[in-house]
Image (cartoon, rainbow over all chains, first blue to last red; front, side, top):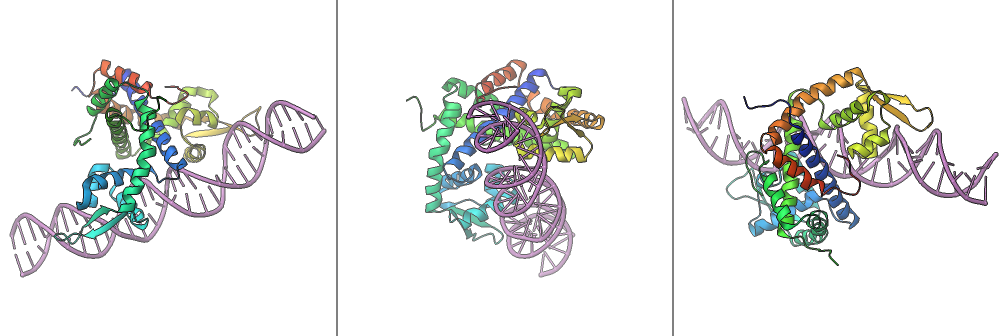
Length: 152
Length: 152
DNA sequence: TCTATATAGATGCAATTGCATTAACCCTGG
DNA sequence: CCAGGGTTAATGCAATTGCATCTATATAGA
């Protein structure tokens, strides 16, 4: 019976701030990429995971777990990335259903270019606004709001 | 020259948490509404603003300022809300271009129903995870990340 | 082995979003 | 008074998202 149907004013305010600020920041970052003639953030997320995965690549379902994108969304995003030559799809030896996605050289290059812009956005939008301790505190508090699994 | 092109690890982590957690929470809330057969969150945002505005209603451009939705988005969202009888569009006396949007009785009713579900989500997703002090701290820290103007 | 069920990924179709432009109106300066 | 420029809101069209479903393969169990 500790469930409350009505949230406290503090909870409402924190929720509102979280939703509003995250949307604003996301849009700012997205805008910066667009202004630089680069692809949207979603592409970065995928390229980033693939770059970290290295030559072994990742299966689409692993990307889904890591990026939180919907299955159909990943499916189509990968199709676009492949069409642009940023990733390649390889068959999987022991599972005829699946495929392995590997980032290509130009994929890495685009990712690098995107990070130059994206990283600057992060530095300006959050790095310059809060101290390292405060940022750590934000991470810790938000970490406690994560849903079931986890990750980063 | 205090501009840094590369963000600190703390900034990156805080950014990643912010993006990931806000998306997760948003989706959870959205899911709860859908499961209850209610309209999406965006509708709530607009109905909420209109309910607070009272009988005087609001102009679309005021809704844009408050909700951060794009102009064309508000335009179409209002068309849907009107089609569902949740808001009404009234001509404005002193400005022939514009209109005033006013929430209807059924609009208030839907908003009430949505809040029953949405409020519970907020209580469960953030209210139950952090103390009041911690929630206040989150609000304060996130508040410092807000872009130019402000609001709530 | 063979069937039932689960998993991986793609896709048709409707709804929504984003972008650019447009239409209608307002306001200021000459 | 009126031309030029700004503001308010809508809209055509392309791209993306969401939903439901579908195909193909894998796996567990009788």
